[in-house]
Structure formats: C-alpha cells, structure tokens
Image (cartoon, rainbow, N blue to C red; front, side, top):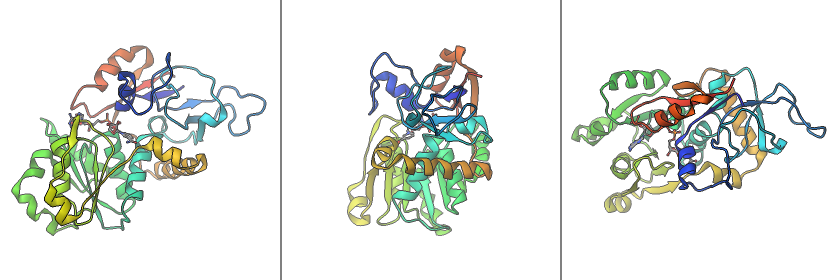
Length: 298
Ligand code: NAP
C-alpha cells in the first residue's frame, strides 16, 4: 500500500454500525492506493509497478502489504497525484453517481448540498462544475468561514452559505437569479436536510447519502404534498452490487480523466505516516477540521 485515507465509514465499520461488516479479525480502511510488487503466474490484468485501488469495500487498506486476488483490484494510471488515487474509489464515485442517476440535469441547472466541505462535497463541487452545473453549497459556520468559502469557490462552488444563512428569510429571493435546484444532496440529516428540502424545485429529489448529524430526516408534509418532492437514498456498495465490475471500472476511468484534465483534485488533506495512525484517527473524528487524514506507507 502507498496511501489510504480515513473516512467516516471506516470509523462506522470499526464501531460496528455500518451496512457492511468484515469477518474479524480484520484490517481497517476501505479506500487507498497500492503498487503491485509481484503477480501470480495466471494474473493478466495487472503487472508489477502498476497502481491499484480496491474494487470493493472491506479490503483493509491500512497496512503496508497484502496479497489480493486480481478481481479485488482495479488498475489506475500512475501519473495522477497519489492523494487523488488514494481517495478515488469512494467519494468521487459517490458524487458522480448522485449527480448522474437521480435527475436528468442539464448545463445551467443547479444542485444544492450540505456538508459541502466533506470529501464527497468537494468532489460534487468539482464534478458539477465540469458538467456545467451550478452549485449552492451549505457548510457549518466557523471562525475561519471566509477561508473555507474561498477554498470551495476556488474548486468551482458558485455559492457557499452557512446553515444559518440558509434559514434566513432573505433566501426567498436567492433563486430569482438562478434556477431552483432539482437535486439536493444530503450528507447530514436533521434540520440541515429539512432546510435543503425547503429550497428544492417542485418534483425535485433529495438524495441522502450520509447521516453526520445522527438525526433523522424530517420532511414537511406540505413540501411533500404541494411540491411532490422525492426522498431517495444512495449507497455506493449497493450501486456496485447492481452493476458489473466493468461498469465500475468505466466510472473510475471517467474520474481519472477528470483528474488528468485538472477538473478533479483530491480533497484538502493531511498526510500522516502509518505509524502515527492514532493521531490521524483522532483528527479524523474532530469537527471543523476540513482536512482528510491520509495514512502514508511509502
Ligand atoms: P469527510 O470528508 O470526513 O467530511 C465530514 C463532513 O461532515 C464535514 O463536512 C463535516 O463538517 C461534516 N460533519 C461532521 N459532523 C457533522 C455534524 N454533526 N453535523 C453536520 N455536519 C457534520 O467525510 P466524507 O468522507 O466525505 O463522508 C461524508 C459522509 O458521506 C459520511 O457520512 C460517509 O459515510 C458518507 N458517504 C456515503 C457514501 C454512500 O455510498 N452512501 C459514500 C461516501 C461517503 P465540519 O467541517 O463542519 O465538521
């Protein structure tokens, strides 16, 4: 292994409250990039020196070395940045599928999301910009909010708002200058998701993919009746079960070409040597850090 991030779902898996749990004893980590050192005599898809990422969750990426079957891995170009390869197989895939699979969006359409500074959120901003979509990005307020706003705007975010700003009465006029979103991406749940729903266009869809606030989604009855909003969920592991390995590989290559064109960069991150994993694990669970912890093994 060369590098592997610490994602909230890795922590959930260790806590035992994730949709997929490995047999114990197990190695943590579901995402990352490795370099092939040697292959068996029947292996044809990868060769020594190639960069590979996990095809599925549960592989255990927080380690230095492993023996995997060829089917467990997907080759990626080794000329993309290491941090991009290490963070490719979960969050950008989730962002891309949610932008493509729920509403037929056209360039100029808008999308609203919360936890916009998350790994998924940063990928949504960049992929949406590459597709010509306009984004309204909600984040939690913090002392250095301007710095975060500037960073998200530099990725292609059109608007960055705090949760409090989204609740303000003046938001009524906000969508006079841009189309109301038909797609909302909910990483948080609770009040934050109720607010996203308030701004969706009639017939629009809110896709819930994370529950960072650990609060249920509460939808107003009148929004559901009078605006016919749709509430959906997305789980990448399920998408992979419903699609072929070739379709997942195609998705990975699409994202690699966005990376090569400079349209998709890795989330803001801090590299931590594997032996300091405790420090990285602690940092990964702190609020307002805005930096993905990446364990490095090389
Ligand atoms: P990440 O980079 O670690 O970011 C975490 C985000 O959650 C940050 O924006 C953080 O905002 C926010 N947050 C943390 N606690 C919060 C709270 N109590 N209320 C509101 N916001 C809070 O995370 P990630 O790797 O992108 O993953 C984000 C979520 O998506 C996780 O729940 C993960 O499991 C999920 N996910 C789901 C799928 C799927 O297939 N369904 C795929 C990938 C990821 P602050 O900066 O304000 O702390």
